[in-house]
Amino acid sequence: MPINKDIKAYNDEQAAADKAICALLAKEITAALPEAENKIWHRHPVWFLDGNPVAGYSKLKDSVRLLFWSGQSFDEPGLQPEGTFKAAEARYTEKKQVDVELLRVWLAKARDIQWDYKNLVKRKGKLERLK
Image (cartoon, rainbow, N blue to C red; front, side, top):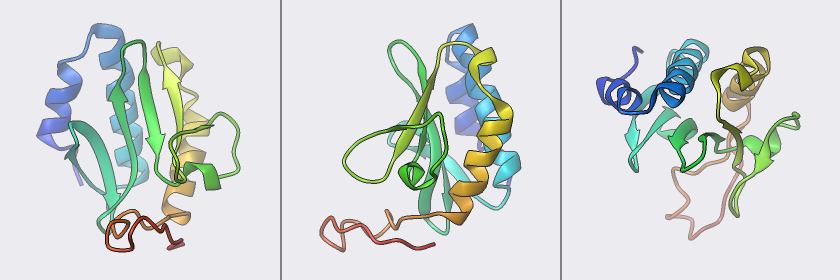
């Protein structure tokens, strides 16, 4: 699935260094998860598999944050826990900080390891593993 025009617009709105990071992340995520739907969700680019968010990024004050909704289950270096569920993140201030090979490992795990965020509200905050 091609990169959504709204994601391209989001990337284009960023300062030069952040735009380069966002463009690289969008390209790599889309290449690794070609079947994923991608769109702006809660004002940030997010990729979904079967309606479940798996990867995305957002511009923070001092960096670009790459987020994997099930990232705490990946058992891979370079990701830090984020929030109270299973999400994990990496933050970048320069494009050269993005380790593309490691990113591809994380993206493969994003497909293979998923927690069911799609039905989190229906299950009253109880997160269940899908894969």
